[in-house]
Image 1 (cartoon, helix red, strand yellow):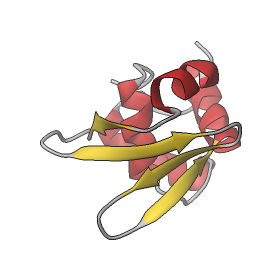
Image 2 (cartoon, rainbow, N blue to C red; image 1 turned 90 degrees about the horizontal axis):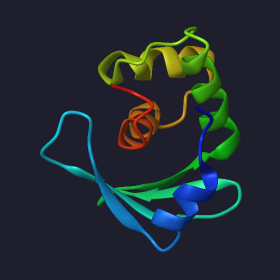
Image 3 (cartoon, helix red, strand yellow; image 1 turned 30 degrees about the vertical axis):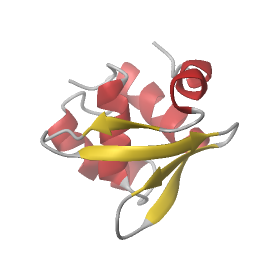
Image 4 (cartoon, helix red, strand yellow; image 1 turned 30 degrees about the horizontal axis):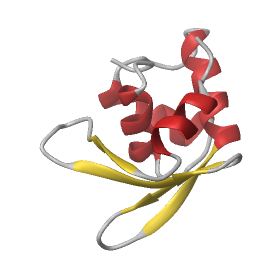
Length: 99
């Protein structure tokens, strides 16, 4: 299933929170525009590139990357981008792409 960017924009275009993979905490999404998911933590803010998320989803769907959310971050860092890999795992788990 390809990444539903329109759904992300609809659900989080004005912000929202999703649970983290380990649970007990949340990741704050401040906006979703055409190119980025904007995220914020109490100590930092960053953005997740649409191109990186789409590449990760394609790799997961083709079984070249794990679906296991706990193992995903390390593969993402080496195969896609070394940018907020754990945050990407939170987003993709929330979307049902990771287990």
